Image 1 (cartoon, rainbow, N blue to C red):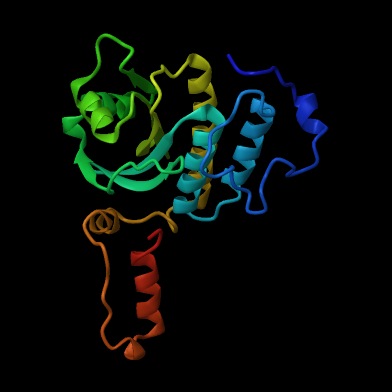
Image 2: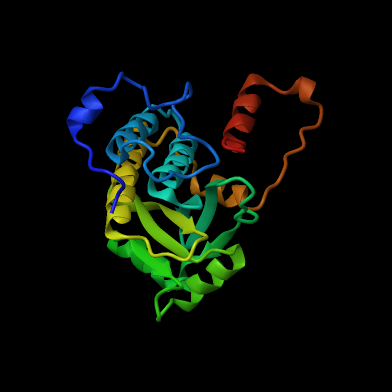
Length: 238
């Protein structure tokens, strides 16, 4: 269970934005500590911060930061679905914790992830459980984690991305954790839908993003305004 019960009356007594930093961000590099504020108030602050983002990368980044803080996890990643590929997009972790290099992997190699996206239902994996999916167990060991909560991102009724909430401690994500995480993911889905197709990268752009590490522009002084806008779109979120 959570540390204390909160009602909407508690939130109503707060000044607008009281729980946010100047940028509307969750406290970076740490997780919630016991007795630290109201879970419900933090969830509302997170929803407001997510709704204030103006790009899909911004929405995913804000979502990951707040999930780590509010749920009390170690790290979070948000990926995009490109055909049969899951392409790493955004990551956030506690200080001195790494999720490795960004990569792309095939859904067919991870049946539990594919099931999560197909059904729209979260799935949990923990080494405390006797029967652990072998593919997910491999990733957990590679990252030095002991548990993961898989959350689908659906936009327009279709799989748009995947959120993975990781825990280094030996624990299980509880039903309360899942409800809280789904609430924030739902806010992100609504914001992504509201941003529409203009901000959404194409499948080609996402595939390139998974392979390119830098772009060298020769004779930049001759670059036109149109070409600059194209470069900005190519490198959005880098």
